[in-house]
Length: 465
Image (cartoon, rainbow, N blue to C red; front, side):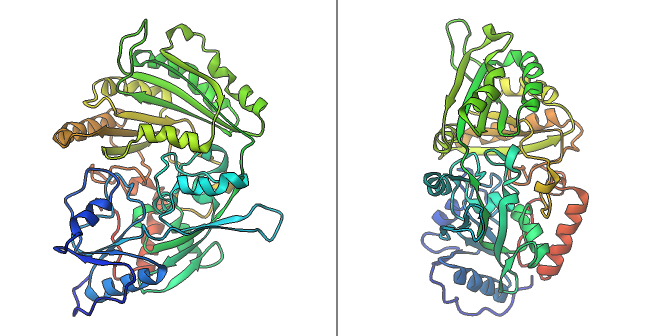
């Protein structure tokens, strides 16, 4: 965009902070949850207090020739909201979370602002015996999560979280606020369900379909030395694929683990399974195969099936992804099996410079039912899926952990032609990371929708493009 004649600041309710103002650096750092703050500096940061502020900020950016990026909860590991120059629109004040009684026999719907976290939505829904496939990390905000598609709790049964988005309210590049659904502006609605940080508008609220709360949520786990990965994955992957869709199974490769009486400290592989079942009996029956490991004598630790809750699952995730840490992350959809991919990662995980780093590989992380994948940009793109997380706390260790992440991903994607999930892809790793997060036809359609709704390129597109 070309710079135009400056106009006065808009009549905002929320603050407008210019680079050089007191509080600018704090506002810039707070735009990312990750303690690694990219060295990118917007000219202006606006903290919207309402949808009206969003409209006024878009008008201000357009009139000043400033490109615009948005932040909901700041969990994007690459710090995509932070761009050099332009205007950063902070949506963390848009926290509406209300339930509306359904007109028909179904459950009510929820209307949520982009900054509402999964933890907050769970707190509203659980007392009413309702549920939604929220993100695994409790502090992930719904805005970026849903825009990217959303791989949430029980998505193997319920589909990508964006499948339950019924309507979005979008502020467009020309400053209009429009409602989008399958019947209203369906092209924007399609893009809003998967486009992630490259979406060509600003979503100020989502209307969500809800699910009855599972009658029983039960979890189990078994942990082995990482050296046993071949045996563990050969045993557990077929079991996981054959279980009812309401069972979520994941391999977790961790860089360190405590010693036991018979096993020294060292890297581990855990098979973790959670059932979101219609009864306690069906939950126990579904999880039973993981309690009958034929080489159980090799286990370092085991958690027998036990009742849990969304709140407890979130509490456990908080320990895995603690705040005030430094993070790098990358994703991979691949045609290879989990057995192949986990085996490739044994040496990199064992050599991780930080004992907190891990690989999470949920087996069939999302339903592939065509009915749950319609009218959305998001799609699963491989037979296996994993996320590699570098987690550390000392800034002096930034280079070593960055190298480790890239080397670990190269080990599982040796040809460099794998696919990615836009929400947690390392968009600055080189190569077409953003484009490789979509089917080719979907990538082309996103470009067409961007050209139609944002012809002057007001909104920043993907990092690395």
